[in-house]
Length: 325
Image (cartoon, rainbow, N blue to C red; front, side, top):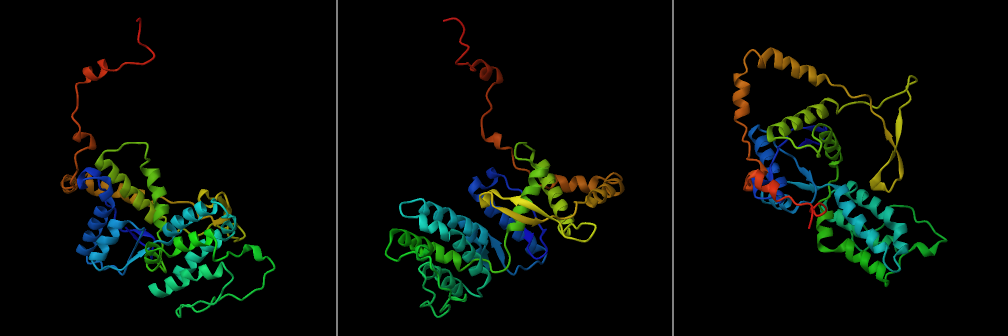
């Protein structure tokens, strides 16, 4: 759980799949535990921004909590489907509009004050790609950009074509309109996605950790992230801001300039060491008791019956080393 105002991690819950009957229920269970903890501490949430996980949608709807969807996750799903349509027969024209439609998603979310207004602005793109800039919906009667005459008439889509019909079906289906109405107008989860990269530095996926070990590494990742969240942009000796070149895979290698932040610091390590030497070592009992109170689920391998090691070894037969026949 991240406070999107300050970009700080406020809670981490570690859920193991055998605790909840399968991996599909882990995300919802983690959210339930975090909300319960925050409520017990007197924290009241204005809204929650997540991806479009169906179980999370239903859970928050039943609790009557204001729930918004992250725009990037929605745009990613739409972009994949647009790319698939553009690769079909007579879909070349749509390729010219893919970037504009993607930008339109973000503009729709940021420039609207209500769900109906988001839908009105969202559906206006179907007129715009046909060079029609006046719309029937009174919530968004006409495009806000200046009307410019163009000599390239080939870029506009035609209403009675298969490509436009597929585009219209994609952008106006029931689920798409429902999701557009709940796009987050202010905060997004990009900072949380960046924190996932920090987790990989402390707990790489190619290493197996015990439950407590994994939990400790997640806490360290959160402390490291929170300690460095306010790093300013680096500058030269002359005070000129420093940027770095980025070739994002998600943007098909398109080059972008990103602000380069100052070097990370590790002051939280000194604070941890002070606690260990000044409090834990002199009186470890409270810390040991708190550690033992953490519910640790049984390992995932416990659900399988462990066979005799010698029997497993004897059953090992190489298809290439069979010996004499």
